[in-house]
Image (cartoon, rainbow, N blue to C red; front, side, top):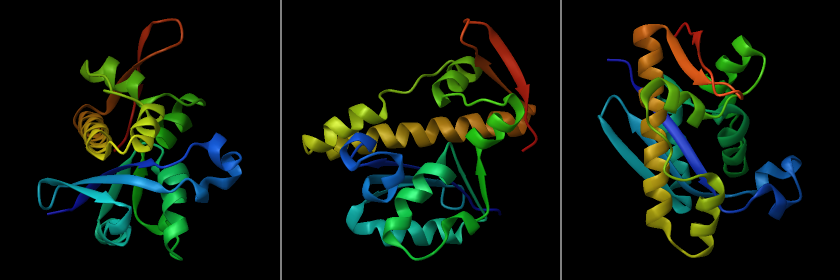
Length: 177
């Protein structure tokens, strides 16, 4: 059985806190979450377990995420000399962007495709981190991983996704996953 690992992480700091996007390696991971199809379960990693997270990603047959190549992997590069971009990955944001020539938020796709919405956002997760509310970050990150998994599975099954454009129209795009 192929081990697909769905993945997301939250950071300790914002781009504003670290002097801009050029300093992504200074954001730091607060919580990382995976869902593995091999063990049919979620794993939550705090920063002390970041090496275990990286090992799980390396052992996956495919890592699926949303902006994980350009963001999450870059955050993790501060913790490892390995080039995580070499891991077999499907970044749904990049695939959608190739088709539409612009970026879409995961929430737009999840709501139009599945009728579900994210329960928070990255800025809320940063506030929770400052308040030491790690359980809330873990719950939010798990939910994002679940949405990522459901969107991916829908795309695999139906070869399309739906999204809402800036005018509020529901549109579809073909995917080949």
